[in-house]
Length: 336
Ligand SMILES: Nc1nc2c(ncn2[C@@H]2O[C@H](COP(=O)(O)OP(=O)(O)OP(=O)(O)O)[C@@H](O)[C@H]2O)c(=O)[nH]1
Ligand SMILES: [Mg+2]
Ligand SMILES: [Zn+2]
Image (cartoon, rainbow, N blue to C red; front, side, top):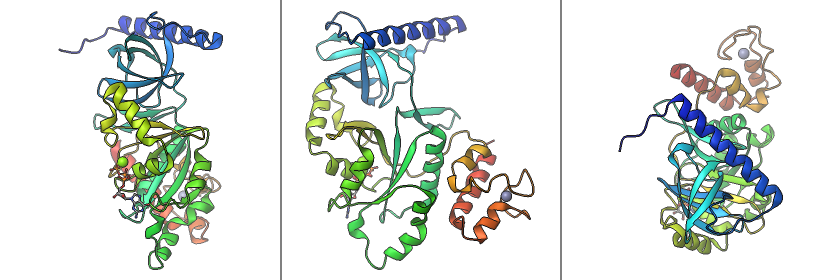
């Protein structure tokens, strides 16, 4: 069926309807009323995972419902807080997406940013000795986190594979992130080393594991969640959605409080529409030097009097970071 084209007026009406639903839901939340099942009144919920038009939505008690979403409301994604109401045994319909505190997006080739996950507090960028870690990909994620307004943690998994021969290279390429101010955790999903340190960063917040395919994101979820089988079983029972856990983005509850989202691995990552100021903001250790170059439009590449190049020469900025910055700036310029 061809998608209906909405007129301006229809769009405004839908937006107004959604706002009305949000407001009503807020009132419900304030009064902590639980509408009776089947009453048709909207309830608050959270999207646990999504497969095409099918959503698994958790109600405030943690029970899961297989929901469809009204086409007019946009794209609900994992982590979204929504208004929904039951339509039958274990089933429901999502009627509005509540305001997002943050949203992680991915640019599509059409030039539109597509949401991947919402209401995230923290990006956990997972790297490992295998597949070969990419500092460029890491820096892209760090820029994205800064611009989405969310924290970032770097997690080096498969520490059981780090031997004397590999250690020096890892130190050379990644140890400086600690000095920049990012938590850098070494862990192993296999030997369960470092998991307590990771847990302390995850407590009470919504975090998402991102990174290349094969770095061990799902293995970490398995190691961190003793009841993972139960959670996947509930997902399957509610919606049949649990079977696709590696191909979809899925939210899990941590027993110590907080939520952890597993996402499918990526080979590369493209930053959305950023300008050069936003890019600079993503390299937080540049902060003290930006604005001190001789030329106000300095590209920090070759210009005389460049404060960043000087900082690099004085080892206050890691050359790999400046290199990655220049490559990203060039890639963004090409996009435009
Ligand atoms: N030696 C070692 N191997 C690990 C560790 N964690 C995961 N692996 C292995 O790495 C491989 C990939 O692990 P996954 O957890 O599937 O990786 P992923 O990041 O979820 O991959 P995608 O879902 O494709 O993005 C598996 O063979 C795991 O057994 C670890 O700490 N040490
Ligand atoms: Mg996985
Ligand atoms: Zn400069």
